[in-house]
Image 1: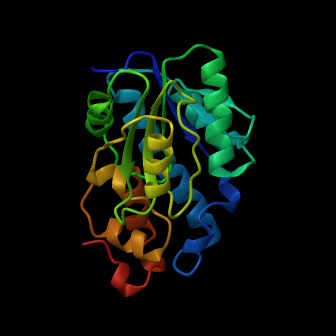
Image 2: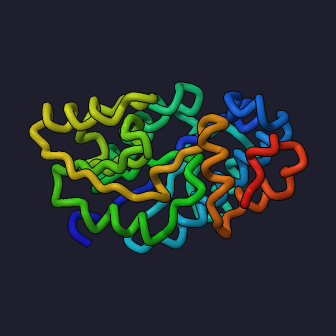
Length: 225
């Protein structure tokens, strides 16, 4: 795979008890917590099965998330775990750069439709260092996967409107960004509209199975078809 040697996946995970507050109108607290863990496991399973990744680094202080990470062969890093998505990813980038790792694939824990094949496509598209590859969110505003070689090649700043700023940041570092659009990675579950879109898509994910179990608690227009 071009440019993918010794790439580590980085997965920031906030404490699941407080996860997905924007889903409160459609899911109670226990269901939100269960969904956060189900989505995390879907992502971990895809990463663990993806060819070409050298390792997995989960940035978290959450005990349950750490247990899941260990089950899938991941290392855990507490540094930056309470500093938001950007702080967690940049702490991991610094750690991986200090260890001499070749690259970092930053990916969120709320994209349950991601597959090992999609991860492989991102790695294949990535060029020789210095290089920057990005997968935008479905609205082309967020950045749902970012691959940097070396890990700290580009300063990252995540948020709802981070996609175009990330393209400009790569260009400012003298790197031509590579854009890859992938439907599984693109669908992050942040709000009720995202959840409705996901619920209507057939998938064998743990996350959709959980939603089917919770269906009685969802509004009628959320029923998974």
